[in-house]
Image 1 (cartoon, one colour):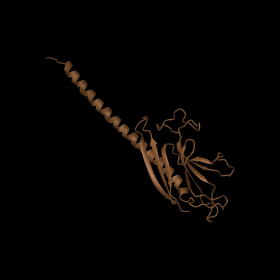
Image 2 (cartoon, rainbow, N blue to C red):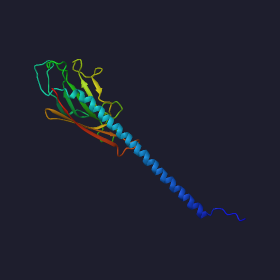
Image 3 (cartoon, rainbow, N blue to C red):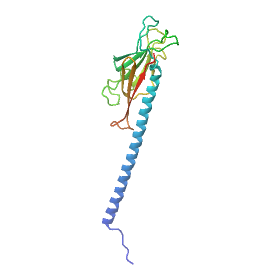
Image 4 (cartoon, rainbow, N blue to C red):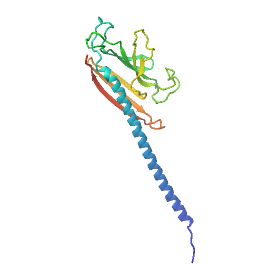
Length: 209
C-alpha cells in the first residue's frame, strides 16, 4: 500500500488558514478587551461626576443669594470668581445658615476647581505640578476658614470634594437665583493615552435662601 504525506503546498495552505484564524481571534479578543476597558473607564467617570455633584449640591442649594453686611460674620451672596489663583480656572464662594433664625450664617465656603493639566494631555508634565504633590491635580476642593484665623491651612479646612481627580473641566454660572454647574470627567482607557472616556453632566441648583 502506497503511503503519501502532505505536499508543501498543502502545508503552506494549512498554515495560512491557521494563521488567519489566529489573527481573527486576536482581533476579536482585543476588541472585547477594549470595549470592556472603555465601559469601565466611562462608568468610573460617571461615578466621579455624580459623587462630586452630590457633595456640592447639598450645601449649594441652601446657600444665600442675598447680602447683609450688618450680620456677624457679614453675609454675602453666592459669587462665582474666574481664575482666582494660579492653577484654578474658577471657584464659587457662598455661605449657608448656621441655624434656623436667618441671622446666623457660616463663614464663607469655597468650592475651588484646580486643574494643573495645562496642555490637556491627562499626564503630569514638567512645570504642571503647581502644588508640588507629585500628582496631576484635576479636582474640586472645599475651602473654609473654620476657626476664623485668616488661614485655610489648618486641619480639615481644605478637603477634596467627591474624591474625583479626573475633572477635565468645571464651570459655574449664576444668574442670581440658579447656579448652573457643569462637570466633565475624562478617564484614560487602560494604558492608552488617546481617545479617553469622557462624561459631561450639567445640573441647575436652585438656591433656597
